[in-house]
Length: 484
Image (cartoon, rainbow, N blue to C red; front, side, top):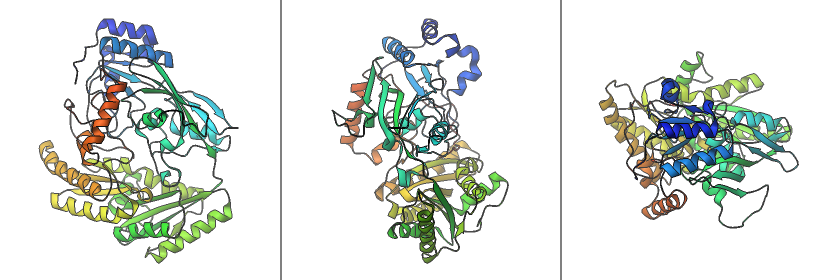
């Protein structure tokens, strides 16, 4: 890693001339500065030297041109809801916060597209397009606080990815600022465009290491007008996982198919302060069907319920009212926060082929038992993306790491052996970069390094992320959780 310059008083003054004095946070406001040195990954802290809050693409371009001239590291940041350390300023320097670039620039009803700045909250966009009868499907559990820019950087998913795909499937065009300060545009309001390399898809999921996205054109569809939800409890997780496979064999296409094990149900009940339905079951499947015709959706839900009962579900509980539907979804969406309260832990964002979910559950239980740790697993069973949380109650940090570290290493090995990967939707960031070689061969990592070099020859943009390499130790290392 190249040596970086230190931010000086002259740098701060130059940045303030670009964005205004109210758009710069310095060590004079230490408490606020330190907020930008954390995200939801873990209790890790990296102190930025300065935080800069642009309002326009021109601001971002001028900031990057200055950073390149001075060789200052720049860490782009959205809402700080990330789970892989992607927004942590591991080399100090500038944190470039994009929350003030929060305009929905256009909702094009005729072409079913929206143009947005990166600071727009996911839920705000969904509600805005919903007023026009349109739908933007990617919905991470943190949808009420996460920003579109962060969703783009991490290629975020969510519960509805099983039917509607992840963020990349909804992006048609981008405006982005290169490390040099040049502004680049890709794509357009087009259903078809194969002119040159697909730079739009290259930037989505690049975790802010290649360019800073300042505008996105997103695909929309008509909003589903019918939606039904059910929960099926099971006596054991293997049966629940096999039932999930049976649902697909029946040709039912759920919009959501989530799995939650008993330990997670208990954690949710404690967090919510009330019992949850079928809390004594060893596992839940939460299934949702949506569409544009009430009768068709009802038939699909009925068929799904029949398949689940045939696959040995203990019961099928249908949410017959909006209140009951909200109650069931509250259980699923609170799990990250609920697990956070249990103990020190590390979350493994595993993803495997859906038919390998039963083997993943079995293997994770064996690994946890062998290492003397607890595990709580839940996630997007329909697309094989299971969040495995490995916990220990040991108060000594060294003992926690001694137990958790090897267990995590084996869980990732297990996922890869099942044809899976080390992260399905949280990204690599600085937390998972040491595991990248488990699922990507040397040739692929070499190509990634070449791409990074081509975009960012001075390695100033979000350094220490994605690619394996030395990262300075954070302040603190107690693992905690976040929304997934």
